[in-house]
Image 1 (cartoon, rainbow, N blue to C red):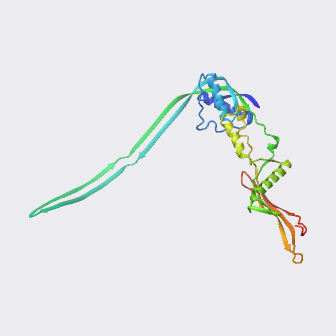
Image 2: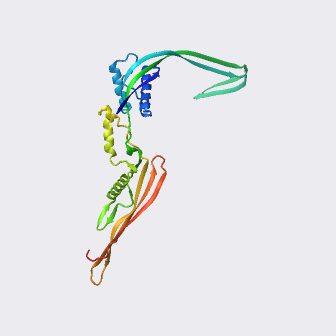
Length: 326
């Protein structure tokens, strides 16, 4: 379901004014902003400007519908006008100062170098000596630098009125209940013995989760969210994001509910084991069965991680009478 609203936006360009008007339209209908669609990288293929053609406006409307996940299904420009020029003045200033300084120094250095060469009865020697001496006494007076700049720029300001078809969102009554997700139970064994058979821990965990979800759903006090089929749900959402769905279907994006509480079960004990005692007189086995289970439940606040509830549930199964019938 959509609702048509008329809003007016302003900005330094026609496109900025349209974007601001669209945000106002979304807020007016749903009371919330759709963030991110005007962020970095969100550059449309068509840029709106003064005198934009109907085809350009329609192309931009399709881009907006995609970026807002269907929050804005379509829009049209009712009027646009350039408002009075605004004057923007930029001022810069720099001021530095340095006090007087006095630099005194001296240098006194000498260096000697020599070489000797001998070939047969001939001998040659060369020597050189260098000396450097000097001093300085330099005084510098106070210095200062004062720089200022003032620039005035005239900027245009556009006012655009639009009529937008905005999708309205209405939560189902059940969505207002506390939302719960039941995690797959943690098992402390790979399999459990039930009578003469072995039950895989994964099968037992799925059955326990299904029983807990059924109990919570039938209480009509909670909204149980199913996360077992997330892969299939994500695949459907990927089809919508790819643009292969209609604009109306695109509005389904972002409507997945987040959970309030997470129920984390742990299977501490489970089994129904046989007990055997051999009868010497008759040579037969006396068999009986005992067992039961214990499941610990922890309820965690999904937002804060706070432990809301911790409780253990034990159930002893009725034991069978000893028998030799097997």
